[in-house]
Amino acid sequence: MDNNELRAYDKQHIWHPYTSMLNPSPVFPVASAKGVILTLETGEELVDGMSSWWTCIHGYNHPRLNKAITHQLSKMSHVMFGGLTHRPAVELAKKLIDLTADNLQHVFFADSGSVAVEVSIKMALQYWVAQGKSEKHKLLTVRNGYHGDTFGAMSVCDPVNGMHEMFTHILSQSIFVDAPACKPDEDWQARYIQDFEQTLIENKQQVAAVILEPMVQNTGGMRMYCAEYLRQVRQLCTQHDVLLILDEIATGFGRTGTLFAYQQAQIEPDILVLGKALTGGYMTLAATLASSKVAKGISADQQGVLMHGPTFMANPLACSVANASIDLLLESHWQKKVFAIEQQLKQELAPCSELNIVKDVRCKGAIGVVELHQPIDLYWMQPRFVELGVWVRPFNKLVYLMPPYIISHDELKKLTQAVYQVVTEFSERIQ
Image (cartoon, rainbow, N blue to C red; front, side):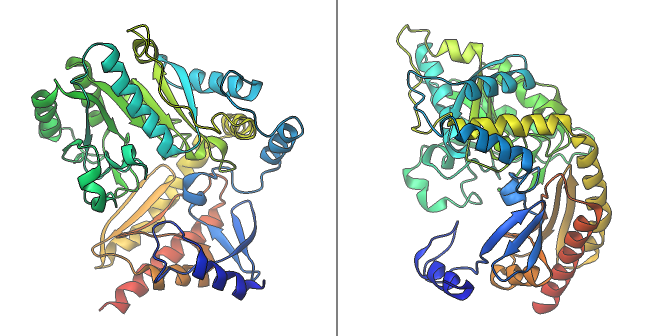
């Protein structure tokens, strides 16, 4: 099939994320990728501003990560994890335990971020069952959050903005409070935590855990908030005997300027969920880390086993490339790179704030966001970005960048200039 035939067959037969088969959004076949460049079947080269949904922090086709995959492939591509183990999984578990909070001493490997969130929820619920407190079966979370597309994960996504409103009547009913309103550079005020505190106190007898994304709410609106909010949440969870689950699937491995976003608040979660950049974008893999209190507490009634076991959990290929990706990250000057990206994003996206269509411009670490007053037109905007030689995937009212850490100054400038140009043109189109 030539390029046109590929696109035509895709359009007729293949579902893409959040698309309609009656009116699918345009797709662009990729022939290869290297560094931060996606090469299309037509030969066009695009500077990638998405890191393939925030996973490819080292860029594409990295020789060291390729080597890790091929080396493991020569030994075994997969082996069941029930009753067996292997070196890549054990080494990865040790890395994650060494890098995260001291209390997190136990790792469960899953095969996607959504599944890892499901596991975190099961951990929390089973913990309280084992403690003889099965009445603690609710989850409390904040609005504008997003945690995945499986049913447990959907139940803690924003009930309106989380893209799952049609399933509301069949989802487990979680308790929602106002989204964090304190901006990162804002002085703390007690009113910012008031709704959370009052709701937690009123429902503490039935709340098993609080789950939220630390410092940045990602797919729910790319909202950024202050570290003090997270500290207050941790304190209240401890005070009222509620577990704290932090979802760092999007923010983990350096994206916000620290290795994990929760470190900016100097707290420890009871359960931590990791994914996306864990393998550097090479393979699907996620991990749910738990404290000894939670892990051992699940078995406190002498019969509790964690009721989950994905077929491909701890896949050796995925674990091998995850080990290599983490080593590559730690050996690089990633903090310096992320800081430079942040400064450039702030400077070069700032002119967007002068456009009437723009509601807000905000940046944190290697994340740059331009929020509009109204939803974007994906059918026009996506091809326009491609025409300008960049890959940017806007959604809802947001045009944002989360590029690979290896991006050069000029490559990032091409992205920011394209964002300004496309937003300006979109503003003119709708006048």
